[in-house]
Amino acid sequence: MSEEKPDEDLSALAKGGRQNFFGFILRLVARLPFLFIAGRLYGPDALGRFASALVVVELVALVCAMGEKRGLAQRLAEDEEAHPANLVYDGILLALLFSLVAAAFFWLVPAPLFPSGEFTELDRFIVLAIPGYALTEIVLAAQAYRYDIATTVRARAVVEPWTISIMAGVFYYFPATTESGLSMAYLASIYAGLATGLWSFFRSYGPPKGWRPHPVYMGRMTARALPLATADAIEWGTRRLDIFILGLFAAPSAVGVYYIAQQVASLPQKLKTSFEPILGPVITKNLKTKNYEAIARQVCQVGFWIVAMQAGIALALGVPGEAVMGLVGPEFVGGTGALAFLLAAEVVAATAVVSEAVLIYVARVKNLWISIGTIALQGVLTVVLIEAMVAGGYGEPYKAAAAAIALMLALGMASLVKAMLLAKFLDQSINTFRWPLVWAAAPAVVVGWLATQLPEWAELIVGIPAILAVYGFVIWTRGFGPEDRVLFRRNLDKDEVPSE
Image 1 (cartoon, one colour):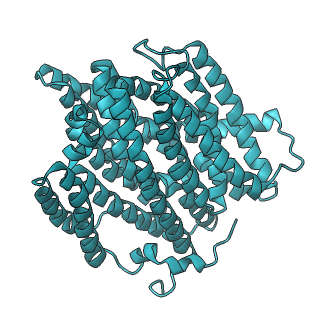
Image 2 (image 1 turned 30 degrees about the vertical axis):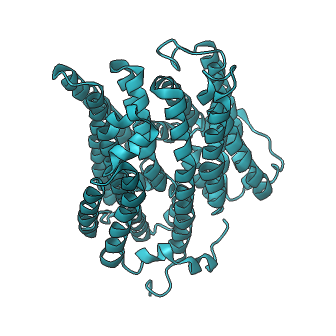
Image 3 (image 1 turned 135 degrees about the vertical axis):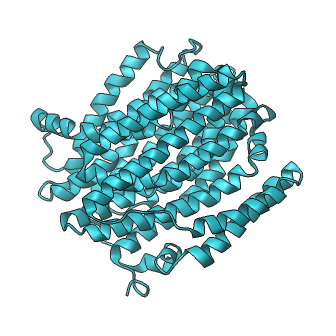
């Protein structure tokens, strides 16, 4: 019975989930110093300029990765005759070519990176992050195919965030880099993460054997990857379009405040995206055998895990939101409303992400159109709601909240549509919501409200752990069944999981 001995796939998913939850804790600890340093030392104006450049750099890098973050698992699973290293190096070569061309373009035409026109010569070097980011996505996907999630945790949750936190502080105190410290720190963090991924990748896959990349094959690979690469870019773009549009309607300082709120809200988002590497190999294996019932069960299981964890963290960060934003600096407290809606957006987006983990393999074109519709809806809603705030005479914080509300509504619609499409294909019900989520949230909100009556330092030190404790107790006792608790059984690490 599954209650006594969960199946191999569930064991793999649970093991990956445990590793990534640990990675989330590490990322949280490392990210907070960066937010504090960036807010206190550099200020909202510098953060706004940095955020605008980051939007373009990471979006372009994701496109240059050619969908290999999720598509590599399918190529490795389908082409069993080719040497695995050769298939990965095909992706690396393609990504390197595209990303170098993109970096050269933005070096020569920096205006899209810095729409305000304010930047230094050192700031322009941020374009070098494009190839580094793209290659990191590929080598980490290659490791995830062999169930090596630990490398992703090291690169994304330890090396990258600690590097950007430390270097942001270091660069600020050098006169030559004071104005460009955030860009330089980000660039250093990207290549530190790439080096971490490459170390494990070379040990795992080794050099290519008889590798002769052919232009025709590379062309076919590019054509096949375009729908997935575009879907990846659009899914990521939904988390950055708001910053871009907000930059057109609001001052750089407002964009900086929103960026901090977004960074705090992105912490629970990592719980969602960190399941993707382990979901890919498990799903592709079951697709080969047409075991659709197992896929539906895994999607619902992982979806509930993600929603349950994200909801708890969203409550812990959102209820004492003023204190959390005030930790970065008093001028950031105005972003509390935006933070609340951004945290809610991440919770409602979980169903779309786990559904898309299957749709990219079985209905990639339909999934692409849904993604395009999502970002278009978000864009329209963002403009309409911001204009409504302007017409009503509301200030900059309300514009930021409007952008967050638009994101939440668009992602909620995407979750509904993608779950319906997947359910139709699998002929199985897809539902990640359970009523115990409400039962756990209610007392947690009450505890959080009581914590807000305390001094700010106590609100953070006492309130956040208390909210998590109450929520966790209720969801564990009333919401988690035997299969859910597999996520927390470390003895399953001993289960045999195939490496390929």
